[in-house]
Amino acid sequence: MAHQVEYNFDELTVSVNGVVLEDTYFFGSVVLEEDGDPSEFYVKSIMLSGGRNGFTEITKQSDAWLWNAICTALYSDDSIREFWAEQISELEAA
Image 1 (cartoon, rainbow, N blue to C red):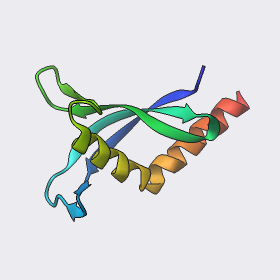
Image 2: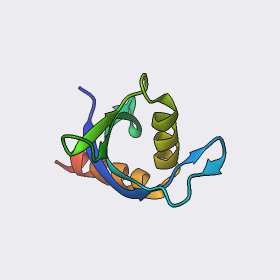
Image 3: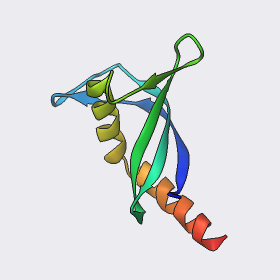
């Protein structure tokens, strides 16, 4: 089974068609899953804080533009790659 971890994000800003959505921040979590090579990952699911139940699930099918914007922002963030590397190191050490 592929390794999965949850990553929480705060005040994430995104771009849509090259335009940064200023003063718009996203809060939530994503599930990261190993992408074949343990050093690589992909975003498996996105949950945003807010909504009726305290969270809102974003899917590729229903919210493709938002899914892509959040993934692009996360993949370009060094802290998520560092987080993933730490998780893999801990897993290998166990």
